[in-house]
Image (cartoon, rainbow, N blue to C red; front, side, top):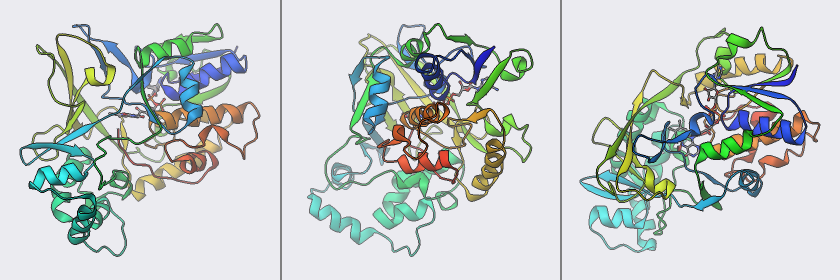
Length: 396
Ligand SMILES: Cc1cc2nc3c(=O)[nH]c(=O)nc-3n(C[C@H](O)[C@H](O)[C@H](O)COP(=O)(O)OP(=O)(O)OC[C@H]3O[C@@H](n4cnc5c(N)ncnc54)[C@H](O)[C@@H]3O)c2cc1C
């Protein structure tokens, strides 16, 4: 008999498997319906021998020393600071908007102080900031909103920013200095040999058995276990009893090109042109040297694998119905982005999993030490674990 059946071999499932097996000496079976471990963070060498991320670019960043050191047991790190350009008005300019973005775009030579004044002069007065549109126009005005945010958000979400919760754009900063890093977290690094290798090491323990290509419905009645950790979609677990939780999906078009370099930075956003939202060139993320280069185009879709929970009040309400049911289900623990219907970054999911492990193994609930300092969102993760609702934004 297994102590735990863990559904899903992504960050949530794998961190819990590792902790329960090696720290708590539990016998664990991990299953995943996909043919590989690592969930959405899965990377692999393609037919040309270039390391690519199958489900879109995954960049690791965190403010949590604990999360960084925990994962560091399973990988060496390669220091990497992520940079993004946006293709606007025929130029490629830094994103998030900073001093160079504005100077380059308008052919100006403003100082940081003058840029502050510029933003003040173009910002629109919004009494109550409710939507994604309000967030941006109240900071940088309508013109920059239209150039950088409006169409990108429409493409990404299939909805106008005025219909979307403020959380979607509120975490994209605007800077008056020349800092062109996409993230400002304390720890910014990529696993030296890739994410999948890190997961292999994490799951390499005699107490852990793995079954791939297996939907949990196929085995649930045949394999004896004491408790379940479920990291799949919470609505699916309850047979869509209250209806389907809406997600936005993506289609990835991978391409390998017969040239060493394709674009100047890892990611170029296309807010206004083309049907895709962005192009990522993997060698910037992985540091790999190769005569060819591989890129991925992202096309937002209404249907497909569930990627981004849609942050609207009615969806939060629907999720809360499932959440109540989940909390009342004995011996099943719901964790991770699909089971808690939240857009979480990888570090947040690791923190959530470490915290659940502490709870399962009798650690004091109040302290919840694993989530301290995670990307500035410990409160949300705490709330997610303790019962109140929360909305998080996307920046993946
Ligand atoms: C396009 C994109 C880019 C991203 N970029 C970043 C980034 O740059 N940085 C960052 O920190 N985060 C990023 N993220 C977020 C990151 O992917 C998540 O934080 C992380 O993958 C969540 O791990 P998880 O274990 O909760 O879920 P997942 O990785 O999705 O794992 C869940 C697993 O459960 C399995 N499963 C589901 N249902 C069943 C079933 N019925 N039976 C068996 N198995 C099942 C699935 O196959 C899956 O493998 C990005 C997300 C997306 C969509």
